[in-house]
Image: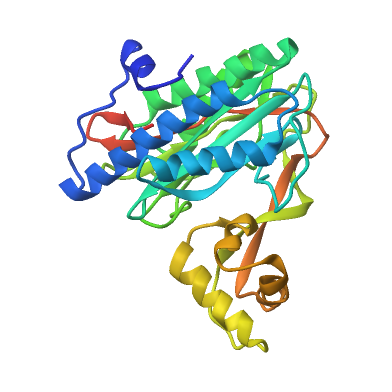
Length: 318
């Protein structure tokens, strides 16, 4: 089971040796990765049944800032059939249910250079094998990815590992290439067999994240009714002066990276920003990320690391 950089070294996966990017960029990717790894491990031990989800989100984001990074996106705490994109809205009263599986997805950036990592905390013994399957699939993908390999070959390998253990990959959630200030920077890494001629190249950075569900599940996610993560999209003419001010605040503070409504408390009270925030969403100056839910309501687990591709293969940053 991959838990941290030391565990990766024990199984022979490289965590040093970056060469193809410029030195400054490499150092910032590595620093973001170190912070993300530390915060992930802390949160893994911090999460408890009955705990408020907002406490987890804010604890992780505070730790990232305290260590010298910035959140690359709001901490995701996605429970059971919720596969991704749940972060607490302001005043969230939801808690971690007993006997649940909890995906904690953390992103860190240092000057826009991003590391993305996730772990599943399992409070239900019935799902421990499924969590282990996601770990093994991630470990296999890290060993497999290299310059010249196609994304289709990598996806087939991930799917084969997951299915060999009696589970099913989520077909429409993927790993992704990472760029400066861009969580999704072009190429996707599906966790299933697919037709693609796109190849992996030296010098690229990827988040690899197998999502795994039960064999009887649909194996796809659908958009839920809620959205609590947002991103600046474009400047447009808006009616309210406060909307213009808020949009400038969002662009200046978050750039092209996702943010949570909780973070707008730095701008002012909810009574001040809410009408402006609503107008920015309606005018499509901002986009919202819906919560993703497994289509048949089955539970989902996730494991994730960010890797840099050097001439020999994957260098794990997280």
